[in-house]
Length: 117
Image (cartoon, rainbow, N blue to C red; front, top):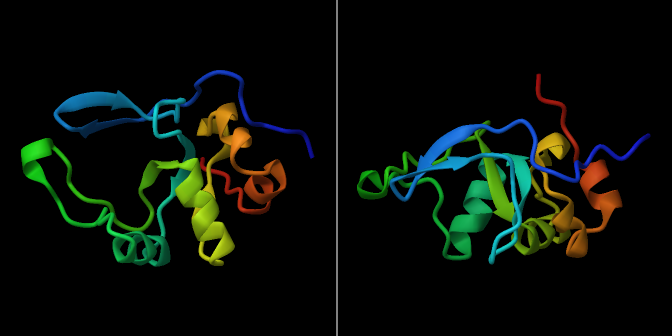
């Protein structure tokens, strides 16, 4: 199986966050939001239990809240934490930035890869 993690951003999706349009290929940033995932109910509950409620809408920031099936860029460290807990959400490799590999082993990403049509 060939590595399909791109060296540049691909398959951008648009979503409004913090009143700004953000391109949704996961790019390297200060928080390493580099792993693009398909959100699951289990992950939403896992994240909320750790103080990061991604389900609750915050219209003041243009954030509708996430629901299972949404695509979202996660911090590589949080994704790895969920993986180690056995509840990592599926990874959209074609929108995951290669910088994620500095934190998450490629084998873990491949093991949890999903194809989005």
